[in-house]
Length: 273
Length: 178
Image 1 (cartoon, chains in turn orange, green):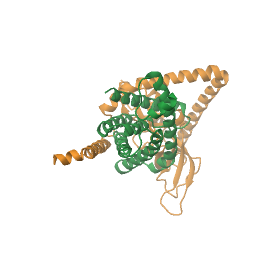
Image 2 (cartoon, chains in turn cyan, green):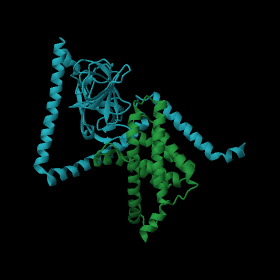
Image 3 (spheres, chains in turn purple, orange):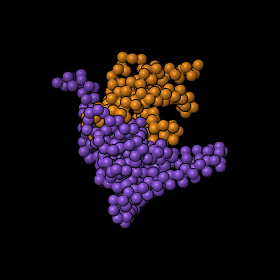
Image 4 (tube, one colour):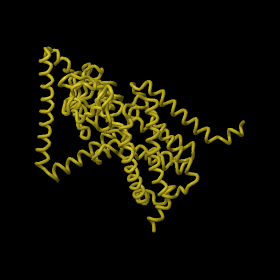
């Protein structure tokens, strides 16, 4: 028996390692909503370095672009882009308010629905792999954050907090394949689920006969338990209606430019201490 | 002991580069998986148990910064290491081209393991759409990164530790010296 164990020592040990890894992975799937001590410690240790790299890079590239390269053009462009972003967000918000009025909803109640305390945060790092879409932000448990809080930017929904360390957190972006947001078409209130597809989104479970058009704006329906009602998510870019089937395939371009995500707002359900 | 520390240091630097530096430089969402290249290198030059434990630990480290399934990268990098280690015994591990070949194969294997693990164990959404358009460019990116590392490493070693040799890359060292 001992000889047999000695002879097959390597494959046995490899098998045990694989089994442990598989068991650990599958056990963690059940407690996915909580941040483990291991994750918290690693995040806490590495985040200051990531912050440093991000700061150093921004300083160098800022100096290069701002002073050396195009002094005035860059400044004007940044100002106009910023203005454009704010106007777009304002327009979207006004459209939502107008539609809510049409359906005889009280403006005050609607404002209360979206009027949550917010906390600004800086994106300091991105996902380590190409398969997933997450970012690290510089706010954590000490700032009142916890898992599950919605994260937005001026243009719309960005994601939700999935793990928190004391001063840093990770955010799962809406474009990640495992992300799902309850949404509706702003124009005619058709309901469905928006899922991530890497860089784009897909609007699922929209009935085949539902009147959906390219260009329609999609907003959060408020029923998913993460985002409040009316947060813009994206615009429909393509609709495919098969000859048979219950639903139509709807492709959506996200409202947020995730390749240039720098500052985000976390919607706090309770005010920070 | 020093070697294990060096592997961890490399892994740490690679993860920092993947999360904080490379996304700022590259104009697209894809990024090379430097940790996978390190694991392939481990597979070609380390023993089963030591290398397996290292691969799993580094994978767990990557898990904190990639996706939100703790243990997924631990499992995928461990399997990648074991497969590379399994075939390495029959090949000339001193060849840098083998490292490139294994990085290409390792990326495909890792993609397969991730797809299988997410598809069968987790509720991970439309994976096929993500993997179908990401896998081929990811292989190319990893190969380009491995090639760059192969070019830079002997030069760096000459500056930082001129009297030592990197196992598996002695051939490059000699080429550079001549």
